[in-house]
Image 1 (cartoon, rainbow, N blue to C red):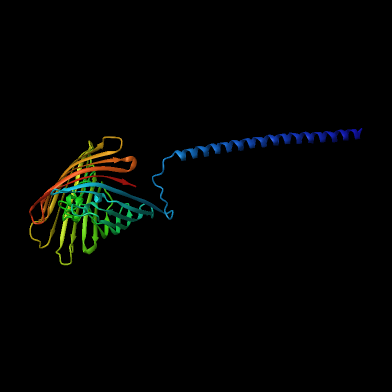
Image 2 (tube, rainbow, N blue to C red; image 1 turned 60 degrees about the vertical axis):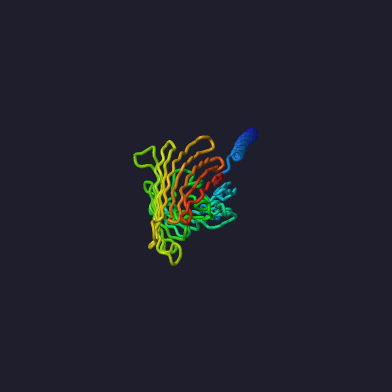
Length: 402
C-alpha cells in the first residue's frame, strides 16, 4: 500500500511540475509577444517621426545664416552688396550714357567675427573690402573707365555693454559722416553729399570730392576710437587719427520722452587736422551737423550744415547747407517706398553750386534689394568764378544686399 502511495505521489509531482512548466512557457511566450508588439509600435512611431521631420526639412525655407566658423567659439558673418546703375549726365550740350558703380552706397563684401568673452564683453574683428568699376563719384562728362579696390574697414574692437567700445585699426573716425545723416532713405541716390560726391564734381568735371564733405564723407582712417554705450538713444565718441588728427562726434536717435508720433535723428562731428593737405599746409579744422525729424505718417524733414577753416587762409570760410523733404511708407506689398525732394548750396570760395534733386527708392523685401531712380540739376560758377553751364544727371539702378 505504501508503494502505491509513493507511486501516486511521484506521478502527481511529475504532473504538477509539467503543468507549472507549461504555464511558465505560455506566460513567457505571452510576455515575449507583448514586448515585441511594443517594440514594433515604438519603431513605427520612430519611422513616422522621421518621415515628418524629413518632410518638414524639405518644406522649410533656407536658413538666413548658414556660415560655419573655423571654430565653435567665434560667430562669423559674411555680408555685402552689389550696386550698379545706368546714368545719363549732360552739360553744355554734351551727354554721356554710362553704367556706373554707385558709390553713394558702394559694392562691398565684409566679414565680421565676434568672440564672446563673457555676457558683458565681446571681441570683434571686422574686415570690409570695397570694389568699384566706373565708380560714380569719379566718372563725369570727361572721365570714365576708372576702377578701384580698397579696404573700408580693417578693425579690431573690444566692447563692454556698460563701459563702451574701443576700436583700433582702419575704420570710421569719430564724427564720420557728421554732415550726411538724413531720414529721407534716398541719400545714396542723391543727398547731402552734393554734386561733387555723387557725380564727379561741380558740373561733372571729373573731381571725385569737393571741400565740403571731404572732411567727413567716408572718413575712415587708421585711428584709435572710443565710443560710449547708447544711453537713452545718445552716444558720444572721440578718436586719435593718423597724421596727428583728432576728432569728436555725437549721435542721437529716438523719440523724445513723452512723444509718440515723432522720431528725431541728430549727428554732429568735429575734426582737427594739423597736416590736412601736405607738410606745408596750415592747420585745418572742420565741423558738421545733420539730422532730421520724422512723423508717424511717414513725412520727414532733414537738414545739414558743414564748414571748415584753415589758419592763415584769406577770405570767408567755405561752407555748405542742405534741406530735404521726404515721405516713406507702404504703397505696395514689395516693401517700403521713399520719396525725396532736396536742395543744397555749396561755396568753397573758388566756385559754388546750387543743387536741386528728386529721388525715389523702392525696397523689395523678398529679394533684400532696392530699386531706385532720381534726377538732379546743379548750376553755379567754375574755378575762375565765372558762370558755368548747368549739369543734369538722371540715374536708375538696383542695389542687392546679401
